[in-house]
Every structure is written in C-alpha cells, then in structure tokens.
Image (cartoon, rainbow, N blue to C red; front, top):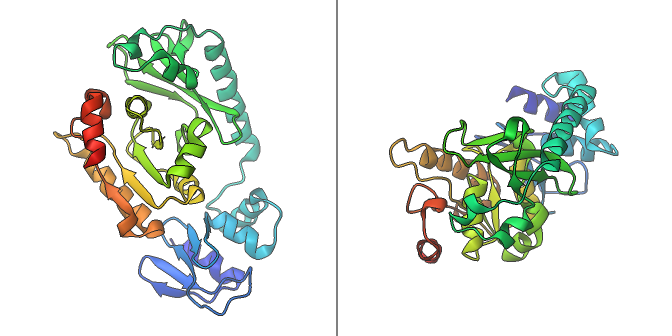
Length: 297
C-alpha cells in the first residue's frame, strides 16, 4: 500500500523495493545492515531479523520516533495519512457495550455440558474455558464461552448453537479480529511447544484438546487476522500448522489455508509453515484415534 511507503520515507528510511516488501536499515538502533529491517507492503508488518523483533507499522513508528505508546503512534499516522483513524472514544464505547452485554449473558449461564459431552468433550475440559448454556438474551439456545485478552480481561463472548435450528452456527459478540483464543489458558503450553496449530473454531480446539493436543489457537473463521499474526510473532514458534476445515465440496478451507500460508511464510519462511487439514470436514467429526493419526502424519 502506498501509505506504508509514505510513512517509511517520512520517517527517514532509505527503502529498497523487493517485490512484496521494503528493505532498509533500522533507524531506532545502530546498524550497518541496509536490509535487516523488512516491511511488508500489503500489511505494514515488519521484522528486524537481527534483533528478532516484529510488529505492526504503528510499533515501528513508535520505536523510530521514540514515542511512549502505540496510541501516540496511531495518532501520528491518523493525522497525516488518514488510514488509521483515532476513534478512541467511539471504539471504547463500543467495547464497553460489548462487555456489558457479555457480562449479562455470562451471569445467566448454567452448567449444562450435555451438548459437548455428546461430542466427546469432557466437563473438566469445558470448565477450563468457563463455558455454559445461555438461558436468555440473544445467546439463548447456545453454549457460550467468554473471550479474554492477554491480560485476562473480558473482550467478548461466542456461542455455539446446541439446538440444530439456529443460524449462524457460531454467534460472536465482540471484535473477533482482535481475539487470540485461548491464549488466556494455553499461552505457556504454546510457548513451550514451539509450535502452533491454527484451527477454525472453538469446537475444533476442544476436540484437539481432548486428544492431548493443546498448542492450538482459533481464527473464528477463515481469515488469519493481523492481530493474530502479531500474537503468533510474539510467541516466536519454530513451526506453524494451518489446520482450517476441510470443506471438500467448496474448498473454502484449503483456499483460506493457502492465503494464510502465504501471509505467515513472509514472517517465518516457507519451511516453517505447513498446511495440514483434518482428514474429515473438521476435527469435531473425527474420533480421538483419527486425530492422533492425523497428528503423526
């Protein structure tokens, strides 16, 4: 995007155009290497290969200008380039509204794990994720999970239809593009595993969890968000496995996985990113034995 180039030039960077990325010498530290800092044109995400640092364009602006926080960098970008809008008050208002609704729903949950028990997920596992059946409001008829951020603060909820009659199957309340679930539970597990398995839904995650595979992160759809990429970069895995749904008829899962592979390969290299779809439509359709066999392949 042209805005990324403009930002880098205005910051004082002497950029080299290398197809999908710009390469340059970092200005926030001493370096004689003119290509160690790389910024991807389509997302603005950058990697400093010497320092093993990475992040969004806002973080690069913050480091280069010596600002104290990301919000200051966002304000600088917004005032000059108008592609990051400083709608702090509106955003906070919306988030507070989401939190308010989410808290109301969570307050009325009842522990009824029968739906998930019938799909092979145990109650002790469900207790880890603090889920329950909604008894009223917009989530009625759904099994609801609270969504927390890295500071374990509530940022939304998601509910799975348990009646077979509701659409959509999963209903989200909150900005899914800002979720990195369930890192509030398995952050240390993922960090120690040095490997991340990316799946499409909480149902997939629960099925893998029951099979003893816990280094999992959920996309809540077919798109790997910029926020999720940032979180994965911070975890610094040696291997990333993309295991979205195997939609045999539409091929949507495979196409999305290929897009994810292209995106993540920019950061980790092609050899570190693997597409490994479930052998059936999703992991919820597979037995524990089938999941373990999938894992060994």
